[in-house]
Length: 338
Image 1 (cartoon, one colour):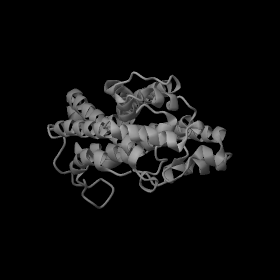
Image 2: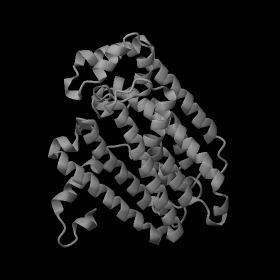
Image 3: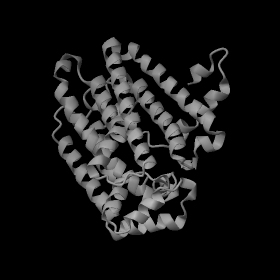
């Protein structure tokens, strides 16, 4: 980003805005997964650095655009970018963030070679396609006030919107980058296994994120509490209460209102119905069940090494236990508070 800003004739104020979301305190989950997966199969961490950074930039670009589409008010404990600088400028910053990510991916040519660089670009393109399809599903459900959704509908949307770009693609890219060249012909089965692991982990992560939106605190969660209900997002818990409640017509009537016309009393009513019909408990149960399935897959992965001490040519001065990090993710996704 600094190198782009320093190019003669560049418009510096744009790059100042581009640093806003990336430098707010976030989880850095996607780049960390990519780096850890690279090392956990025997690769060298800095082989994955530019890919990991590009994933984080794509994530921040998606956040800027999602916040606009959802009408969100806060992100990582601060005002959303479009509330700070207006929608047109925020959209442009999101576009610029995506452009920077593409530039980083091209730097892979000197790190991992032409073949892996092209494979990485194909993975990113597919990830972006799945993400926008999932976002389209969610936006359509809100716009059409859809009332006949079940758990499987939610899973399908969640896999596209969240799982691919949060877990599946970072896992797949790390595996592809770090996997030994001499064994590349046997990569198909490991990719299939890690993809399913990432899918299950992503579903559990998103359900917990939706639960935190209903029950968390702004200080910990960093986003508006109950914002999903104001936006009418079809979470697992909302779909459940619409199916189970004898007040579903009233719930749907509230959901049909524009965000700014919904009242705190109406949102509290939906939350009370969720508690009454065990919709919160249903979400928690499903999240734990899916996370357990992810754990079962993880313990069967023979290609992940028990320990991965730093190699002489690696940057850094600490031997990292990347298998342990990947394992701890399973508990993290459902027991986190932000």
